[in-house]
Length: 261
Image (cartoon, rainbow, N blue to C red; front, side):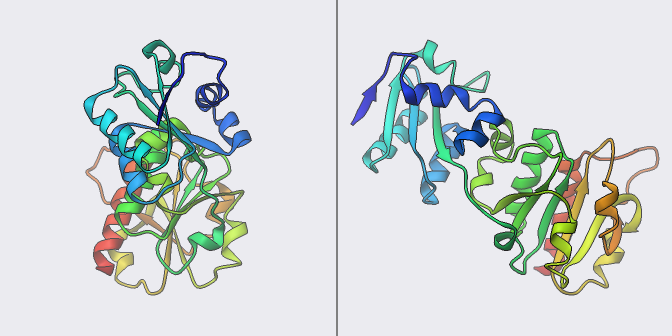
């Protein structure tokens, strides 16, 4: 049964509105996913959902997803458009959001023998989300966010990752030093402009690989640089200084995936 809610004081509505802030997401261990396609995919994967809010002016696709969720036993709240506007984080919303528990993964869930992507101080949520999406697309076993990076389950990261931050193991770690000693079999590749071209590194690689991407402005942190096995770069046309972190991660993961396929 779809429930009709009109009060801003409703506890679930207040929770949904609060999840715009990362601090509230951390405190409540919940995150907000928006859009019918992302929510539909999340439901199809068996992802956990606390409840769904749907606007009275929602798109036809969103209404269909809300009905599917309701039939599947999920709580669905229909709200007036002006109330939904306080929940939504997009300019052209299709009128549906899902409030979900943040997946609980540790480093051991990520380092399972497959390729791992590490984001080192990648603070831009668009880049972070793109990196997660590419990690999922290119078969990574997980993504690690080091201290100083964006919050992996903020609304913007969730949107940029197409909701895949709940489909692939993602965890937060203070530094690479917390990782390398536990997983000595991994080859740690750090993306740097003066590194060896990735295609040459691929010729000598064996065993599992961890790729570390730094921020666009600051690059890899000193602590990360001290742990890498090799520095790798992406060949580019002269005069182009750098690529953003999301694009760099996507290219390097694509090259590695092609080698392993």
